[in-house]
Length: 118
Image (cartoon, rainbow, N blue to C red):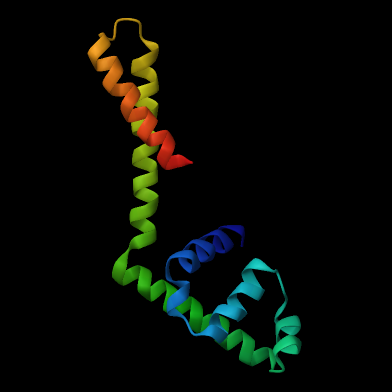
């Protein structure tokens, strides 16, 4: 369940604005605020089934966007690549034999990566 919450949060961050206001509200209550179906239904004055259906429909929409656009996949792949590059740079900088011009370039690249990670 925890993995699904993380996946839905990421999908919502990328594609949430493409949902209706009501779908956004329900997903935020369900995933971010940890409301139960009954609590959401009471808050919005609808049935639990309507809340459940809305969540499932919104989830499907978010997954469909990801299938078509792949933004979260690209985001995760980019973060993994940056992590690997950063690790390589740290290893190269820790070796005393690195020449000074290469060392300077690696430090500049590392500074860019560090800035991206902030």
